[in-house]
Length: 48
Image (cartoon, rainbow, N blue to C red; front, side):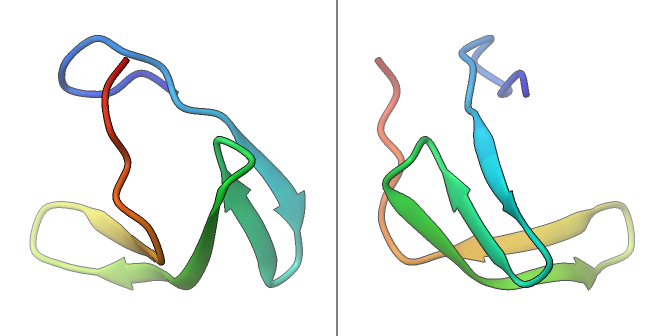
């Protein structure tokens, strides 16, 4: 997926076990807000 900074992140997994960039675990996903769905991860994602 493309980020706001035009970088890329990858996601893997299925069901309730998802990873972002093979290092961050999604701890809470698909939280609906006024203008987006939010996914909370357990590490800070730094741009490369």
